Length: 138
Image (cartoon, rainbow, N blue to C red):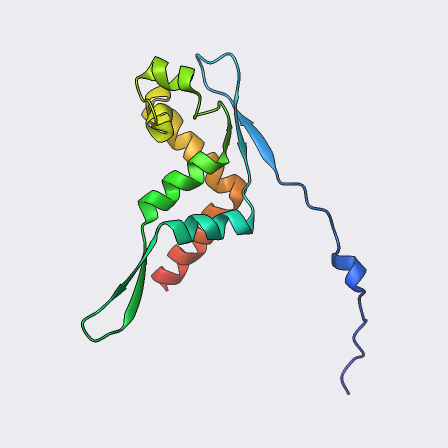
């Protein structure tokens, strides 16, 4: 005979979730960079914005997500501080109307990589990528 399962209440799954934030400090800046976790809704919006739908000659619809654009948009959405849209910041770095370019000019290669890794870790994107890589190996 099967064991009786204990019923759990829907109330056990009700929570007000606070999105995580994290400070990332780099030498040469008096204030830390602040990044935030993005929501599932924001992630879906980012994915849709960089996905192109095309039709093959046979009429099959194919969706292709631009991984580079997605990574760039994820990074820009996650950085709370500094305000990468700040005209003063962009003028200083010579990157008017280019928040991503501003970030690249502000940071060294190692710092930029560290920031990307922290964003991926905070949003859990690194775990999903690890799972996909493991599945590909098998």
